[in-house]
Structures are given as C-alpha cells and as structure tokens.
Length: 188
Image (tube, rainbow, N blue to C red; front, side):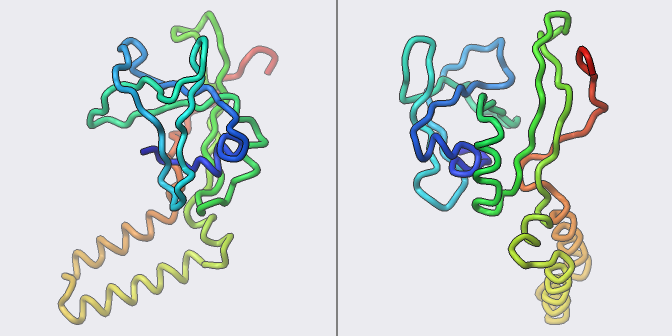
C-alpha cells in the first residue's frame, strides 16, 4: 500500500493502461525478493498498479525488498507535467512533491538532485474546497474544551491534541521534503 493516488499521479495508467517505469529508490545494493503489486490509499477500487515494465516484457508484479521499520520509497518515472496537472486535487491530495534529478558521472552516486519542490499543504487543499484552516482549528478547540469540561480529556492531553491538529494543517498532503540548498547544474 503506497501513500499516493493512482488516479491523481498516474492518470494515464488508470485510464489508458500506460506503463511507467517504477523502481525502488534505495537499498539498491540488495536484491529485491518480494513480488508485489501496488495499491494506493484512495477510496476507489481502481487505485492499483498491476502491470510493470521489465527489461524484455511486461510483468504482473514488481520485485521489491522486504519491508522493515524504515520508510520504503519507490520512484515512478516519465510521468511528466501532464500527469501532474490532470489529477492535482483528486482525493484532496493536492500537488505532489517533485524533484529534479540530473545524471552526472562525476557525482559519487552518478546523479544529483538539483531542486526539490514541495507539494501542497493540508491547509491549502482544504481551503480549495471552501474550508478555512482557522475555522477548523477553532471548532476543534471548542470540541476539546467541551470534552475537558466533561472530564473526558485531561487538560494537558487536550492541549497536546490541539497542537497536533494545528501543526498537521501545515504538513504536506504527501511526504514532506527537507529543503536543502539546490546545486546548480551545468549552464545554470
């Protein structure tokens, strides 16, 4: 199960059965031993990738590494701006995070990331469907205050819950990207 929407991020896979290259982004020195299909976290039953490009052929699974307690990242390549723009607000996920990767033989890993572009914040997406961050936070505070008065929630826990709720509004709908200073490529 992956944290994305097939309909949003891979519209042509969903609608036209277009195949996109998909590969793990780390643990590349380990042999992948688990055959898998990918499903998304959306509410529809079409959020599945079950056809994968292979060197010679198309397979109905992708070889991945066994999961452990660490995040496991996959890259879906050659999607382009068209895929991105067609589904930006489907399932309220907003704009996805993006990176500009350049292949470079002189780099230790053979590539470098020139730029990381952050996706939508939760607050941005909900405002796009006529909800206001401040209003939602105010309503959550009123509910927590009422629960505290009824001794259903301890005051300290209520404060922690409200702080968590408010901080989540600033998070990305997808995974957060840590910003680093971009490295300029040739001719930049």
